[in-house]
Length: 279
Length: 104
Image 1 (tube, each protein chain N blue to C red):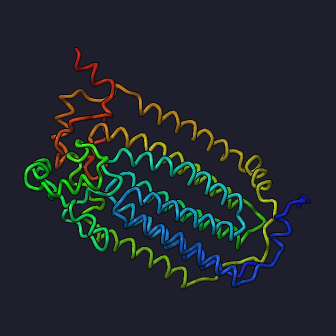
Image 2 (cartoon, rainbow over the protein chains, first blue to last red; image 1 turned 30 degrees about the horizontal axis):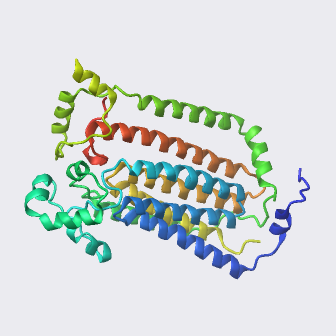
Image 3 (cartoon, each protein chain N blue to C red; image 1 turned 90 degrees about the vertical axis):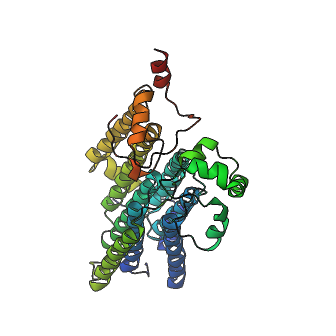
């Protein structure tokens, strides 16, 4: 049931875009998405990683537009970039050092990042980061503070081993590279798909809405229910007063391997701890 | 008419998938692992949209899958955020290899 739409899109989709222009757009968007993803995976600063991820999402949204999935491009920008990335950046504020200053010495850095982190070299994991800060590395500490003066003392102490990658980084890179090469080889080995030379309907939001409310109604309602349950779960998880008392907490902290030094200020101290202490 | 072959889009998606996989495995912080998972979901969505456009452009079911994927990604991010905040309060760290128990 092709609906007549006095909409600009109808002419736009029937217009022939030159292949050169299409390839140029594809190249730009593919480059943005891949370069953004690479930057996300390799940068030492978590905040920069978030921004790189946003670039990658924008690139994929551009590819969606190129594929004439305009509603999905809009959804990509609004939900991923507008919603989830804000959530990611909020999460970054909880980690000790979103800006990437806390890099330990056993990490190999290159280029400008190595230069900027010269004064930020940390004692390797296992030794007391507190001592290294206070006594021996005075000037390092000063440079450190000059760079990220906004940081709290407590955060600096507890996260002296803040390298962003696992020790098995090489293995992970090899595995990911292997799987990527395998996927690409499989793609190039048999690139014969049943491709249809057809334009999609220009009125895609209407079609998608009809499908969601008709054929895929159970999936749609299920997703709604899932969102509701997810919100309930997130709120319930954040209920205060469900944490171990301080003694147990110290014990737990000691049990954790490479236990960080105790934090002086704990702005996130849940309410339940105070109540337990008063008793 | 689109001049770019389907394989080109699939190649981009495969590269994105590999990078996301690397991020998921190699990163130590929980946030970065979640970001890697988002990248994996994004690559999958790109694959689905490319297949929709090239093999069944009149049937919009392919896009429905992407919508469901985005929804699930949003929920996963919210729950991941909640769990990560809990773990941070509990263990004072966000590094996933420091978490030895999740029992509260």
